[in-house]
Length: 393
Image: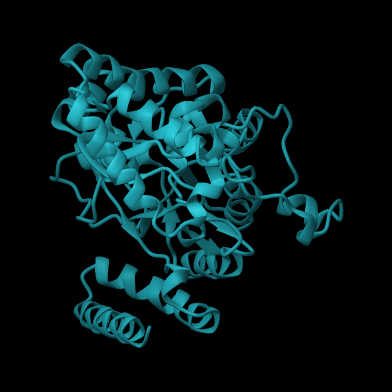
């Protein structure tokens, strides 16, 4: 038996409202998919039940399925949780402690809308979950919170400069790394000035998949001072701003040695421990539960990181879209994404295609050859449509 593990991030009424909206599924479409599962005999199981089956061939219902949500977005509480509860389903949310909102209350969700306490249009859903919201979902039995590492960030991985921090550049993680205590608010507040404009941006990668490169403080300070002396934000009004900064890089390097360095083995091991073990313990402490599963942010990890996770109480970690069935490695959970990226479709097509795509994915995963053929054809049409759109632009 193949057990599909579906990967979601969030659910909302307006996926275009936030910068991470391409990761979200419209709430009405998500509800249709959940209704389909129930109407067609699927039963949601927990990761613990899945692991027991993979390792010991433990018993499962006839059509088991696992629902997972990454990143701990507030919309999981506002929309996804009430919908799952409505249909008698359950799911897992992978959370990063660094992003947990410090609010001490639970914010309104769809259940409050149903009770007439608030209008649906008044719901606040952007941002991240609080510990009280996670406790409420855990106590209901609908949601199981697990580990998504501590930081979910990016770091420099080499001494090759690829850009310079400038207004609107979208490197949110620069601010996260500079002021981690403000990470929870990154969606709703401008944080780009947490990092000095002109700061060099080096080649970067996801935190758990790389060895960190620490840049030269001297070059950083030189470029920042150069931008500040020319009006900071106003400096970037000149379309040649990047050329000027590259010239300054060359001037500085002609007169100064490069003092950038890579993290030591001890620094790397300490960072991995913080990412993997400290995060696990933080979730356990705040939710009074045992955390046994780890989802790698962006799928990035090293062999050393995975070994550390398994040696410190995690039964399994996630990986890409392969099959989950008895006889396969029980320490690896394979997931598939079944939602559509809104950036590739207009709203009408997204509305029409969401449920058929969802059904097609499930049937394809179960081994239906017709579904596999249709999915391949749909993927080809999608690729052609993107190419034509790119050519027209």
